[in-house]
Length: 531
Image (cartoon, rainbow, N blue to C red; front, side):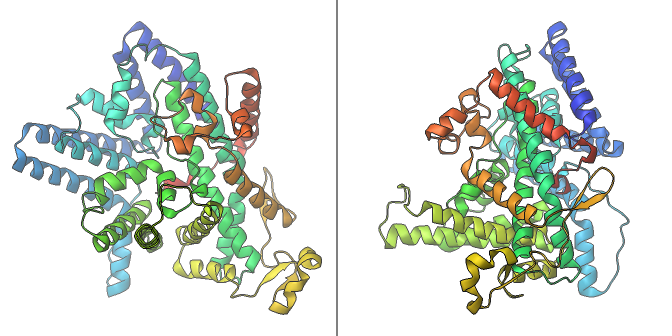
């Protein structure tokens, strides 16, 4: 059951909300938590009932290991933590990477192995990482011992169970025991519905609208079609926007759903495509995953404490494993490694500016806009490898983007840019190799090729110029511990755009919701469900 499905929006969510507040009122907050656990387990079982047993087994083993860690001396603690991590990574490795590893071995050795069809349990990447974090924090004595009931509530809570945000238990469980938590609150409901409607519109009204452009262009490249310059950039930018609106939309919906119950989750996105460098990009993109990789992988490896060379190696290892976490394929590993190289170069440049040029890095650069555009360019290039089904497809798309297939621009631009013809630029049909089709309710309908270019251009301006969700709702604390530089929108227009609980914004959010619901006939999964 998807967040953007009619069954969830009109059935599961309202029933679960009503049951939670009734159980909390006539029983206790514990009664509300029992209801939420039951509803969450039911929600998860709808994907595949067998996987519910896997989830519960994982929870039981991890909680037992956490008790073992808490009751043991230092040496035994290390053994218990090691066993817990091996268990979690082994479980994740079997379901997510066994086929990938066997296919790699087969390709290298020519020896065939067959484990049968392994179906990836939905959400395993997220609830596995959350449980590893819990074990490590118990080992480090950063958190107290929580009861099994509290632990079960934390892991199974359906708003973030499937695709995050990635959380720590001390961010959530204490909220259940705050005064008035279990009492119905109009402000929480209003803020939650607002964030849900924003996320739903991002997914249904934006991500799903540009998805056909990316899909058809990457499919054409995979089939051997030689793409033009415009086609290559259209496909890359369309996927760049699709992925952002798809996953940030999911995160907004998850945060909004949790807020309806009175839970405040951390932000997961903060205008990452405005980032002035790749370090800030990872502070603003999939924030909770970035924090996990920093706290539980990069810093334990040594972080930046052992010199420049060791820092570069730690960054590369962290991003390679971060890429592998996203999917079982060499394209994901390469994508992660590419970002590791980006980060290494970025840190090297910062060191040179600080020590060689004696620049104050705390001051905002006058080249901020140019830096953001360069960062966005390299991020877009990396997404080509993330999206492509093979290296051959990725190289084919990149060749078209860099003009190796010739520089071909739309014929209508000849009057304005005709002076470029002596440089080898041609002007012809906009997209001679691709027919963009948008699937309707009954049959696919071809559209004017200029439409996708205008759509992608408009969405790029939207992500660069408009406030993010946290900025829009900053006066009402939409997320935990907002970072000031990501959640202020200082211009006068920005101040006017800030959300307020009034009739105007209620109508506006209603329009967004209706626009999204008009696409319910063609509900699609979220991209991160694949990872």
